[in-house]
Length: 213
Image 1 (cartoon, rainbow, N blue to C red):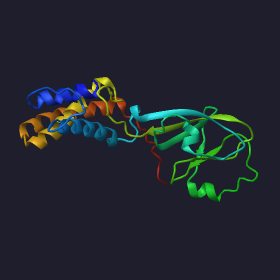
Image 2: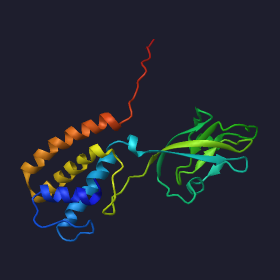
Image 3: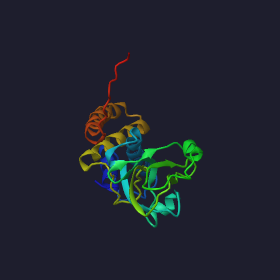
Image 4: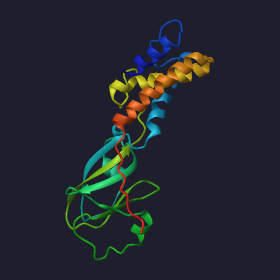
C-alpha cells in the first residue's frame, strides 16, 4: 500500500465521515496523515538493524587521500547513511578502529591494501588506513529513517507487513478520539503483526558461550 491508501484505510476504520483524497490534508485529516507517518517511523526506530534499513555501497579509494566525506562517497546520490556497520575489501571485513585510536596511530610505514577504518563522529566521514593503489571497498550501513511524503510514497518494509503501520496509526487515532475499545483492539493486532515482522526482518543474533575458569 502507498501512503494515501494507508491513510484512507485508517480514515475508514476510525469511522470518519466523508472521503480522504490526498495526504496534503487539512483539518482533522492531518491527524490521520501524522498518525501514519509516526507509526511508520516508530517501527523503524524500534530496531537499528532491520533488514529493510540496511544499505551497501561500493566506492573507489586510492593513495591520494585517507579521509572521505559522505559527499565524496555518495556523489550526486542522496546521502542516506544513518550510521556505519562495517567495511569489506576482497571478501573480508576491515578492522574497525575508534576515532581516537585512528588519530593516535602512526601510519607512516602503513601502506598497502585497505586494512583498517574508522568514522569521524562529527560528520561521519570515512577514515581509512593508507592504501598503495586504487581499490574498491564496499561499505555497509544503516539508512536514515524513510519518510512518507507523497500520495504514492511506499514504505520500505515488506508489503505483507504494511498492515502493521495501519494498526499503529489506528492506536494513535484512537487515543486522539478517546476510543478505548478501538485502541485495545488494534493494540493487540499491532503486537501480533510486529512480532511477525521481528521474526522475518530482524537479523538473527548468535551468542558464543565461553567457559569461565
